[in-house]
Each structure stands twice: as structure tokens, then as C-alpha cells.
Image 1 (tube, rainbow, N blue to C red):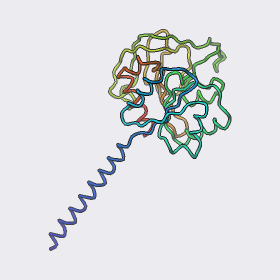
Image 2: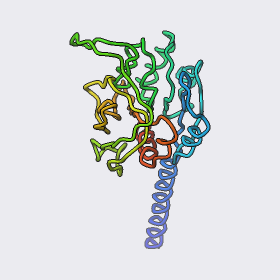
Image 3: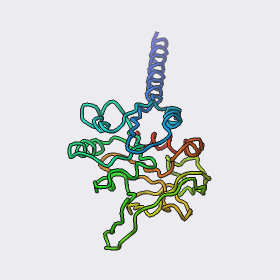
Image 4: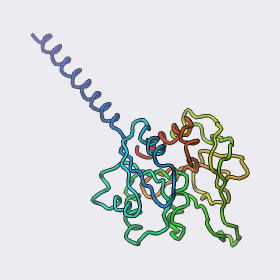
Length: 248
């Protein structure tokens, strides 16, 4: 009788372990809820939206300026896991700045893509958040050295080098070629962790990096101007893994 009881108990415990493991696996498989923020810069909308919706393991909600930053208010923050910025606005109110920074300090993940590097030219804290800045006007650095405005060039074919092959964002990605727009003469903050670089002379040498702001993990990627980049499998893998990493 005791033997039967032990066997029955063992079976029940085993089933509970399997159920718990299955529930955990199911939880891990839940898609990442991505808030895609656009506005302030034109782009080829139909193929870009299709590209983002095709990213594995993601569901996408699209919001556009003006009004997009209302999603960062306390009552709306729980509706998404990661904010993907493909916007380029200049205007931001003091309340929006507060909502934005509070959301990140609480740990909301953020991915900054291509021309979102150029946003909020008059808001210094944005550079601290994303780890760099494209300068639309000549500027002076902290050492008092003057620099010309940043520049860009369309349709440049160049080699992308993976600076950290062990990072979760770049895992499984080798050096690759891409046809894309380049940004030159922008700032990259010294405290960021560089993921991708290039020797292309029309580009800033560091073209993807991670940063921390409050409890938030942030990835900034300067690639991604048009369908030439969006259809590059290395770019798609990079963006997908960036979203997953800032969420976890």
C-alpha cells in the first residue's frame, strides 16, 4: 500500500513539474508587444510597416506624432513592452519629457532606429538617453572644440563589422555588406557599448550600440533607411534580437 502511495505521489509531483515547465515555456513564448513610433520624417510606409510586422515573436501597435508620446503616460505604459522609434520630431513639451524619462527610468525597453538618432535637437537629455546625437547645426563639444554640422549620404554600399560577436543583439551575425544611408559627424557618447562599426568614410565609425538610462536597456542602430536595408537578413536579425534584448 505504501509503495502504491509513493508511486502515485511521485506521478503527481512529476505532472506538476511538467505542467509548471510547460506554463513557463508558454510564458516565454508570448510575443513582445512593440510600440512603433513614427512621424516627423518621410519614409516608404507600406514596405516598412510590413517589415516590422514580419519580425518573429512580435506584435506591433503603430502610433504617430503628434500625440504619440501620450503612450508614455502612466495609464498607457502597460500596453506595450518595447518602444521602437522610427520618428524624427523636434517639438516636445515639458510634460512629454517627464513622461518619456519616467517611463524609461521605470525600465521600459527602447530601440532607436536610423533617423530617430536625429530627433529632439533642442533637448539635451535625449542624447543621454540614446547615447549620441546627429547635429543639424555646427556644434561645440565639452572640450570647447567646434565641429561642423553632421552630414548624410544616400545609397552607400559599405561593410558592417560586428564589434561584439558575443552580445545577445549581435549573436549569430557576422560582418556583412549593406546598401543604406550613412550619417557622418554625429556624436557617440563615450559610455555606450559599441556593437557595430564601419570603415566607410561617409559614416560615423560606430553605427550601433547599447546604452542604459534608469532601469531601461536601449539599443541605437543607425542603419535602416529604406527597403535595401529592411530586406537585408542581417539587419532583420539584428533588429529582432535588439527588441528581444531590451524587453528582457
